[in-house]
Image (cartoon, rainbow, N blue to C red; front, side, top):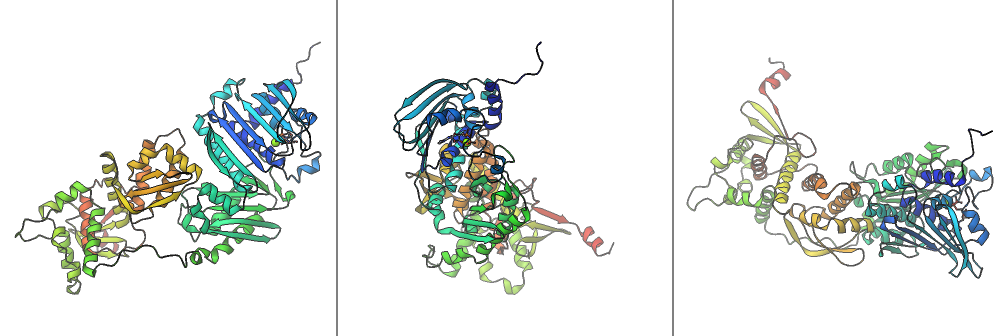
Length: 613
Ligand code: ADP
Ligand code: MG
């Protein structure tokens, strides 16, 4: 009699397990490389072709396996890392399920070559779709080399879910970066389609961070070292000046394992709260050690989440450790003794003033416009003052009507030209160095100067970009910039787009790039940080969206950074310049951040406020 229920053949159960363990090429790399780390190696070479779809090869100099062990390793639930239930609560290796090798072998053409330390020869096993086809002796260096070819060749449904080779190779790079950060004692080499993406030598954590994220960070990293309540925290954290626009440089490890955990992230950001603007993230590499029994890493096979027995205690210990370092603001000392930044020799006071006004005007006005509207009045003609300026100067008390605030003739425009809405307003003054108060007939108009500047800058950038590219300003001294391999890859892929933003940048060998020009609007700002933010933004898009789709967001970013933050007292000519710009800009929408640019309060509303109506 036949039964309805039967045990599935092992080949099929392995494939089912593969569905969970092996999601994409990166998960294969993860399993193989973690095995190499567990095998006590000091050198790992990872090579992928076609984003890992054609080939993934991981070679290590670890302990290797005997022929018997190598064959056993391909059996499901075969592991050397745990043997009874008690071990589950004290896992110190990266792997422990004994599932990876059989799962990977079941969905690929799989070659395992391994030579145990001290043995004279190695073993090579070849399997196809999980079936062992050949076992033979081989000559090789001590260690293990595993080659996975044609991943998912026998599961076409899976294959369809693979992204482009570049995207998959990018995931592999990110994973290897994380592991390389956690193990500076191991040499890592990553080769993608024959190109060495990175090769990091053995050294300390600081060297490792410099090699992976760029040497510029080195001087801004400060050590964390604390042990409280059974929670040990160590590592390096960067000064808040090196912040990023995404949490991409938050590297947190629990007992050596990379994690992306809500509780831990909250603790880290909490420590930086008073030092970072909203939406900025620090560069942090910390290793948290808690007794194995206090943490459960077995929550999910991809193992990025953990569960703490006492999460409040872990949270407070992490936050306390970081806050302790940050409270002493070590970066302020770090910058002492360094040469002061280059400052141009001061011109005479008036000239500086004029230069400032000219700059203020230039900043808010596209080139052709400027020529047209700021042309010098014909000689002999009495220069007219813009209506806004004139009224503003009248409103100002006599004492303030001194020479310094009188507009120079070249900045004056004729009445007819400045008859736009904003130029025609009577300026009452500035409130809190952030709002311009104006009178429009019997109404009160309040302009948010930051929002206005941002909107004007945004339109200007959009205009310039549409006409062939954003205006660039050459740097007097080109700057060498060290990028992380991820940033460099993104820059490579988007070089033309970045050039169109006004960044003139060339490869300079290795991780180094030469920055020769920057968007003119950013010449006085932190243009480098903005470039890194742009790269971050492009990375987060992935390959599915193009540069053009990200453009608007990027222009918003540049516009927003081109504007001085915080309180910014404006001189009357600067207010006029801004208003003329606003008149030339379509103000039907809000500032790029979605905030309103100006608000009007009618006399009626004010009278109601004072119960006069
Ligand atoms: P797990 O890592 O969970 O134990 P795997 O299927 O990944 O399970 O590996 C099975 C076993 O094969 C490991 O426990 C280990 O003993 C052995 N092994 C795998 N990769 C290597 C390697 N690179 N070097 C030495 N031994 C290895
Ligand atoms: Mg493993």
